[in-house]
Image 1: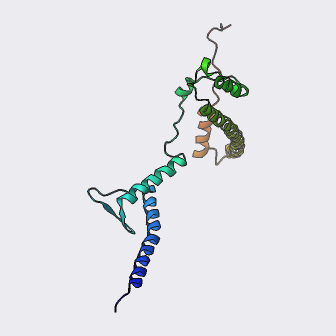
Image 2 (image 1 turned 90 degrees about the vertical axis):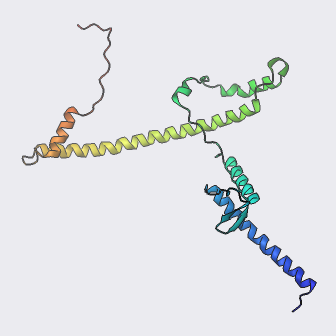
Image 3 (image 1 turned 30 degrees about the vertical axis):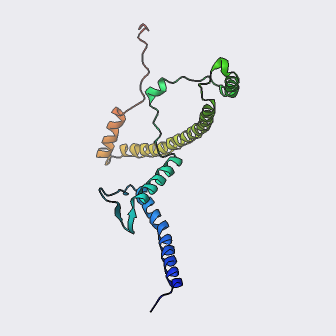
Length: 208
């Protein structure tokens, strides 16, 4: 049966539409593959096998670029370095209340470039200062949580310890349980276990 020009045009358009509908899903699968770390181009080939079909190299490159961009936007491109104790020792400690003077000093610098120079990135430092303020709030929040957790932990440990001591002293008063291995082990622990360290004696103090 002959097919007219209009029929051929409709067939081509239908084919193009079907291919267009498939491409977003294929792109998403490729992006997901790179996100999971399994997206890798085959060596010496223009395409690589994919669970949902054949993915061109240009699509691989585009998907990898999207993944890297998303990681950068999310702040995952470079993990934040841990500030070590040794590094903190080398940092200068600002005087308490310095925050009130930050903006005035920056404006002074920005308004007198001829005398003070222009090498200091004050806009960037404003962002750094804003981060410092937010981190100070976070430190305060975490410190409050630490104190709360420490108090709750002390309360829980105290309840357990009091119960242990009650059972221990009752066992000591028992003729049949006094020599029980658990009682003996606890008694040994109480005599030799860790205790509060004694304050260091002053070597300059003369003994009387």
